[in-house]
Length: 345
Ligand SMILES: Nc1ncnc2c1ncn2[C@@H]1O[C@H](COP(=O)(O)OP(=O)(O)OP(=O)(O)O)[C@@H](O)[C@H]1O
Ligand SMILES: [Mg+2]
Image 1 (cartoon, rainbow, N blue to C red):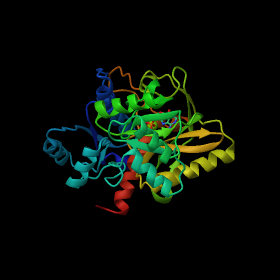
Image 2 (cartoon, rainbow, N blue to C red):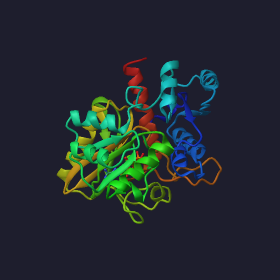
Image 3 (tube, protein in one colour):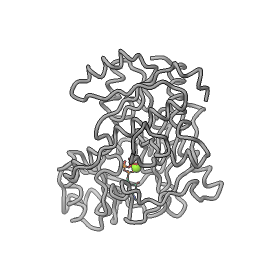
Image 4 (spheres, rainbow, N blue to C red):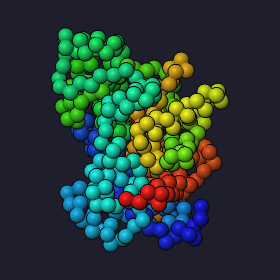
């Protein structure tokens, strides 16, 4: 990384409270530990190590004009790392350059993204959405029309970080399906996405870059040790067994990486993204693309504080390729800067 050249490049590290917890808090009614500020400090440190200057900016959801004033004072080259539709819309509306996917992708829910994938020949589990309390004959007809049968997997159509995903997400009959979808509708005020349950190996593909500079990091396999699937609790308590690179025959790995780039580009994703894929009898099923994938790592020296930061899947992939955390966030920021240089707002 060319540290000296970049030290004058100012990156505004935008962060917001409860970025990773708000949805699951709404789902369960629990209060969860919020590590959003630690995560942002983690990014600042890694970006400094990559040779950038950084300034922290807290997103003020009630008063976006205050956020804008701060950003205008700092005059950053780029905002990193917007983590919600509103922040992306704000950057877009105010003409502030930002890292990550744009307003043409971020607001699309999982069902809409899956329809785009299907159109582009990217395999994804068969599905329906339930947008009002439904049971009995009505549910049977909906499943029949889409050729779906139990067991099924039920999750929020606009979820993230496994929010709203518990052991109950795998449903075996109509009454379980009605109950889990009712809870999603009521607590999260969003439709339930009902997919065929793909029981198999879980693989995650981390992508960085744009256009012909798009690359995939080593594939990561996620094993479950304490739950039948990657539930919120399983993820937050770091119960996953992470294997990187995923043990796959070389040809299979290459095919999957190529498919991951196609899936990323089909959605017009930008700068970085992480896709979750299930493998059943060797056949891939793309579950989703994360436009706000976690990027933090406990391996970054913190700014004089004890941090309980989780190791993000993206950081694990980078480390397995022998790359540092500053390489990971630095590469994403450089991809974004390059994108603006190629095509300014
Ligand atoms: N159709 C499915 N079949 C089997 N397992 C599934 C299915 N859908 C989701 N899962 C499991 O649930 C987890 C979370 O689902 P998904 O990735 O769609 O949600 P998310 O909340 O957006 O996750 P992330 O933490 O990546 O933001 C997956 O990683 C996988 O373990
Ligand atoms: Mg996921």
